[in-house]
Each structure stands twice: as C-alpha cells, then as structure tokens.
Length: 247
Image: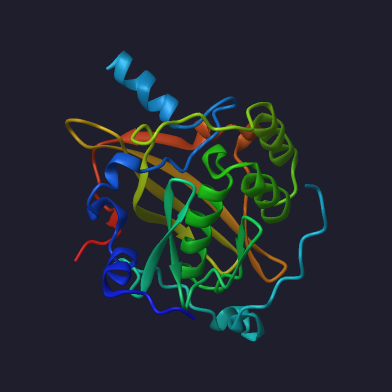
C-alpha cells in the first residue's frame, strides 16, 4: 500500500464543504425526479420563491447477536473516524466500524447492524443510485441493494430513460448532515440533509430515506412511484439536524 501524504489524509478526513475549491464541484446526491435530479427542484423553487443475483452478503458481526441485544441508540453527534471519498462529483462517508466494507463495481455493501451502519448505507446508496454516479453505479446499486418492489422497477425505468447526468460542477448539492426519524434493528428512517448550491442564504434538501435489514445488510426502499421528489423537503432550518463535521 502506498502511504498517503499528510495533505491527502487531511483532505479525506475533512468534511467536504470545508475543503478549498470543493464547493465549486460539490455534487447532488440526488436524484431522479422521474427525469432528472433534485437540483432541478431547487431551481424551480428559486423561480417560484445489470439484472443479476445479488452477491452473497458478508454478515456483519452483529448478525449473530439476538435482536434484543443489538444497539438501538442513535448517535447525537457526527460519527467519529469517518473519511470521505468521491463517487463521481459527490463525497460519501466511509467508516471503518460502520461500513461499507466492500466497495466494488460501482457498489458499496457490508454495513454494521447498528444505527451508524444504517446511516452510512443511506448516504452511500443514495449517492450511488443517482444519475451523477453513472450507469455503472446506479444500475447495480438499485438492482441489488434496493428492496424488490414495483417502486424499484419504476425508479430503474426512470433512470434508464435518462441514463447520463449532464450537471455541471457547482450545480448540485452536497451531504451536510442527517436526522434519525426512527430506528429499530429491522427498519431505519433517516432524513439525509443536503446543502443546495446557493450564492446567498443556505438552503437544504431533506430526503426521507427508509432502510430495511435484509439478507445480512441494509437495503434501501425505493421512493413511491420511483420519484424521489415525493420524499424531498426544502428548508433553511437545521433544528434537530446533526451536521456532519460539526465539532
């Protein structure tokens, strides 16, 4: 392994919105609004005011733990020991303890059966299922890591109709924080917060994501009708939100 320089390490450890020059190339995770990404929503808001069998999952250490003994306390501060890696133009978090443990072929899998594991899965799967990640990422991610449903098929169809993302650097949003809405060892509902590009007052998108523990890993539930817009809320209020990188 080639050791990283201290400058490279510092870049990886810092939250993406504090890095020099990164805001100009920050990418929006998100999303498909049948034929586009969530940033299209932001623009309108401003104007108005490979099918295959999933690879065998490596069971997380907690898999052998009885459900009643699994951790359920959600973190009230940003997880420690997180580094950030780029997927396309978007930075995603990676944790040595919460996952992902397997990153290959555009997908990222292997999350801890914990609230932190669900959080990492929410961020990774959301970014990797967006058009900006490229077809080599969104197609296997949605096919293999989203729960089978008619909504998933509609999401795949919408992505297939617009397989190439044409967003320019600076047009998209970046992960800024999160808010757990509910958590059990079987189901996690997490509001993933993204900061929209803005030259003035900060504005945020909150995507309400549902993850289910299936087959030894966290899986994403597709949005109703395959349209992420139904789960998107725009706000400038971060009350109750844990900001990633906050000290």
